[in-house]
Image 1 (cartoon, rainbow, N blue to C red):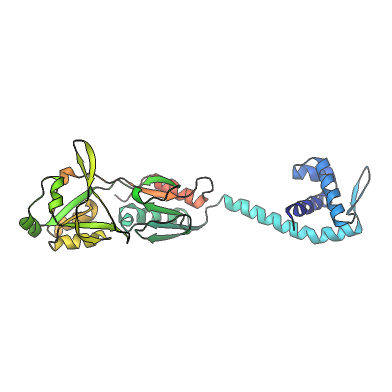
Image 2 (cartoon, rainbow, N blue to C red):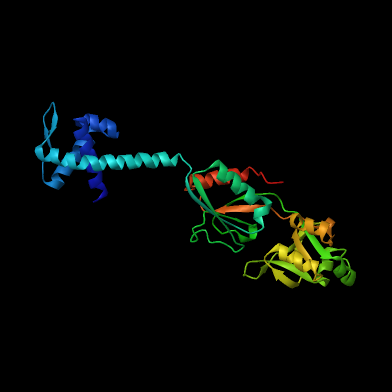
Length: 300
């Protein structure tokens, strides 16, 4: 059925239901002449007369009566479906699919998702922890939490979560053997334990601050992993300097004998970005999640 045929059937049903062209036109927000023309066009296409017209009244013909009896339930069902759709536009439901690096969970994302799920019980949340770059156009993911270096082009992003303080740590035994670095450039002479983003071979640069502002260095890695707790494990075994989040390193410094170095030279990493495709056609559930994430509340 063509779109115009469906529109003509709806006009036919309204004329029959309301007993005239003018009443139907008012309900449909159309001119009475447009409604009359639509009925005439529909009758010509069908080759039958659906209404008997006079200057004072409009009445269904016998074939029009039968057609009205058959078409009214279908139109009523479609109208109900449209009302349900309008109602759902005002509700926040469905499934929200998110992708994030493992590190985001303990910093802020687990807390954020828990608050969101409690606030919107009709929304199901699927959170996939993965450090790889996500193609938002093909993956079925609604939004990805990533660092700025892993954002998808031609998409939108808002900053979420806290700024991330960093720490360089090593074991006392390693420092006793290799020496304590005094300046950022000294790390180039040390064994480096580096964080890698997934399987792509991209290593996280080490960020510092100096007289001219922030800068990064990329030491030659001896060991590489994509989990910071593994980096700390290697550091505890005296295998080199590890560049990790200060929040994750703190218990190891306190309890496991790791030593922080170059602390006065380190810069913080920028906040994570919540990356999504479109503002114009954003679902209500994603909009609600973005709004909550922008509040900036964290677990600490």
